[in-house]
Length: 292
Image 1: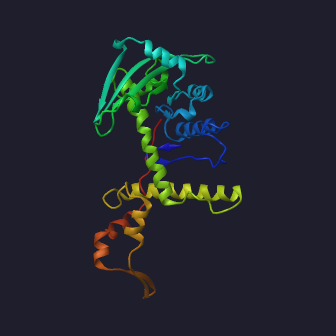
Image 2: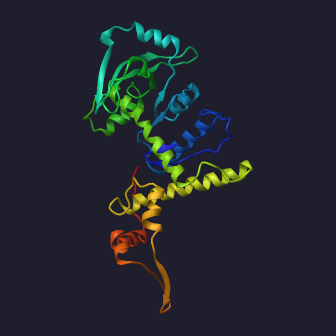
Image 3: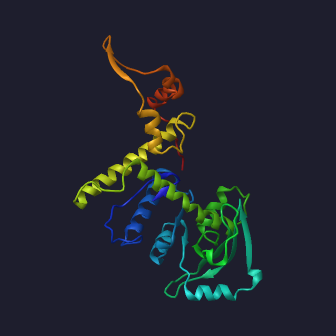
């Protein structure tokens, strides 16, 4: 589970376990929501973004019980495809963000075994992120299921945060939020650069311990960059870049007058702003006080 650039929860599983295997997703979502409600705020809006691998009524019911929003990729079943094909042209609109353009329409739907209808957005890209027109066969169709924007508590909470400047949650906002899941891949890439994809042990339990320690260390690394400030350590730096700048530098540790001193060149000291880095490293970051 990701929150921005942070990996906040993970489960080490065997290779046969698919995305929505067992009750793992339900447990992670439930635990995260409870922690947020207990330690941060009881009323803050929470929205779960997930791809098609988590398209499951049970997960949707968990979100409803927890009073959180969800934006989940659905599957393009035959009945959905037929319904979209029969919609009049006036039911569709274009949405442009940057150089990307989407062709989209929205409607309500529920699967045969479901109890409730949800908001569904059908979207197909026309231009890619570079502004290149896509051929028809190269336009992936996306179906998005969500409870955001419906007449429910989560929608009211989201609109309340906007202080009445926004009256409704548009389909364009849902499309943007769903496609921003691509940033999660940057977190995966950063984790691979920080640690390793290949586990070092033969036993599952040992590898699980190694993996969890690696993810905890990665979280601390990302938090450290944030606490130091972008003027010293840019947030976009991967672990390799950080090592090259701050660890792989020439220095010498000496003892003098009952003190341990690390000596280095003046150029490295000034370039890396080690005085400011040291000052921030030994100072505890401010802890915000939340009042609920």
